[in-house]
Length: 289
Image (tube, rainbow, N blue to C red; front, side, top):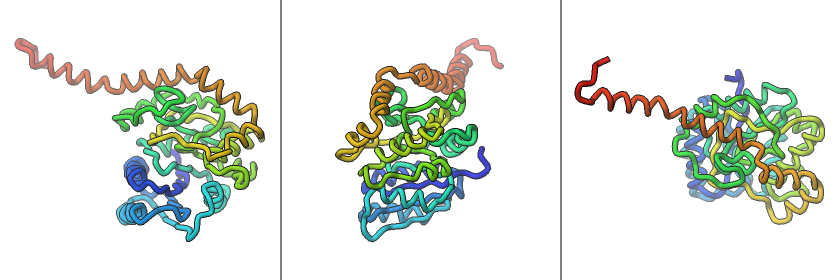
């Protein structure tokens, strides 16, 4: 495990049920004492604020909550959060994300393995290019997060290149972000598009945007661009648009995702073997062991 885990930035959403599930999973899957910043762009209603207050009262994480009196917009708000963190490496976690055990340490270790990595994105059921088990789909949330986390942790460390980072959870190298100039707060209305743009600017400076093979973060739904965002991206980064389409059609991670599925099947074998052993031992005439 990494010596120091990155700060988690969680921009608070308006869906209190999704936020409650996110905070519960975050608490269960993240080491005590990890720094978490819940930042509210004046969006959370009374019920969401009550969820946050209840969670803050009992969390073992080192958590802070800030709320703006007036909203400034998703991208501008996140850019302020990132800027406040300076050169620190930070994870931006979606407010409807469901982190799986070990997720943060695996992301941190991924970034530490290669100084050329600018962003590390984990697998997700709703992660577009990193979706599992089927690419480009909103798959159901995994039924057994702990078992899937064990399977992920045993995956080979390929860290394949992605067309861009994805918004369910992304670890961003602070020095690369600062060198690329931060988020474009004027051209995009969504974190989805601003992250793509940031990813591509960092890639143009020689860094990589990769899949963290060993981490999984679920999500209730995929991130979405704001109106007009895709047109801006297509104009500014026409090669990315074609690359994304090719990636989703050609599915270069097909074998990799299949390997994760196989490891999940292998991860349940000890229990299955134990059940078989006990069933055999209970048969008449079975020899005790």
